[in-house]
Image (cartoon, rainbow, N blue to C red; front, side, top):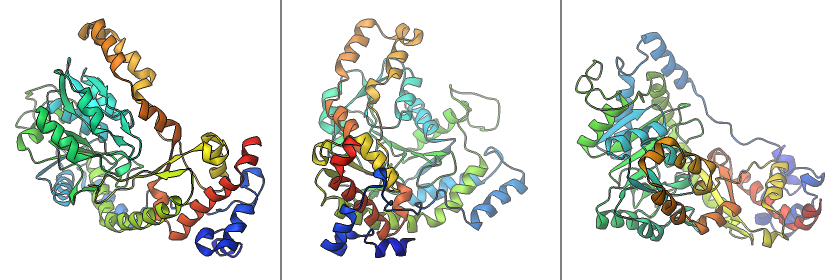
Amino acid sequence: MRESLSRRGFIGAAAAGPAAAAVVTNGKPALLGGAPIRSVKFPAWPIVRENDEQALLAVLRGGKWGRTNGGVAKKFEESWARTLGAKHSLATANGTSALIATLGAMGIGPGDEVIVPPYTFVATINAVLLHHALPVFADTDIDTFQIDPRSISAAITSRTALILPVHMGGSAANLDAILEIGKARKLPVLEDACQAHFGEWRGRKLGTLGAAGCFSFQASKNLNSGEGGAIVTDDGDLIARCDSFHNNGRGADPSGFGYVRNGANLRITEFQAALLLSQMTRTAEQSKQRDLNAAHLTKRLREIPGITPARLEDGCTRSAWHLYMFRYSKQAFDGLSRATFLKAMAAEGIPSSRGYVPLNKEPLMEATLSSKGFRAIYPEKRLKEWRERNQCPANDRLCEEAVWFTQTMLLGSKEDMDQIADAILRIKAHAAALRSA
């Protein structure tokens, strides 16, 4: 099918020349009854190999399935820390658990404020709320999709206890500026690197530059075990507190019945750890493929007026490309709404998403702040102040313009990237017809 599409001018048309480009732009969009540009699915995820089966069977037959009496989780932790260049790593049940355990170990609790981005997965916010602290939203840099350091500075008060940036989509937030703010204001920085496996800031792995970093190995992630997570840090005391918190507050004997603090059962299983070790054998090759495809796709999309790929911060020496993100301007597409643009892309065989909604405006915030527990902790005057402070106009705009492609799409070929660009060119050429359809 790919060969026949290429002969009809549907693949890499803009790169192939004016005649081929004309075929793409003049062909009727699939949403209007034309033949789709792409009829082959993008690579499936997860990718399963024989070593995954062997790893799971070894744990199954060994009969030690929990980390308290097995050794596979420990082996993964050592490998993960070594790979990232961190001194310590602790594996957890999932990325949310990593955040919850680290916040608990850092002593975040009632009355504290934690600076967070409004453009992130809800787990970042839930982890703060579960410790009965207040998430304070710093606005987004619309060009990078990352938290804006200028907004962080403006959001800090005497109650601020932590800065929690997210490396959105696998690309780095501006760590030079964020770490400097933290140092100047004597505030720890916890990196939410749940989407950023092997991403880098000035050659160092994301998650290793702040006080600690948290990762997710959920099913969609670039390294995954269905669920799973990890904490990394160079602070031995901090990782010990994380270990205790994630193991129900146990003390020196991790399998006994002595407890030294509050905590929860946030442990990873030996099965998850085994999958992570087997999956890690091919992450370098996959990362390289995403890099190559993202570079080519960005080159193509920058040539299309109304399509603006997310800009990497200057210090971001490598993105994990968990997401490929860009902004869509309906004005440049004859007023075609983003919703219809997404439908037209899907019809062409190119799946895409509108991305996140503004978390600072989600019902979960008002529901939580109005709960009995939060009203017992925070006087109404402070909650009113919180509502007035948490306005993020740049993020509001981003949430109306953002479009995402998933990391699995970047595991395909250069030809696949050309098909994505060609689909957008076709939709742009027929935007007026699509708008009135």
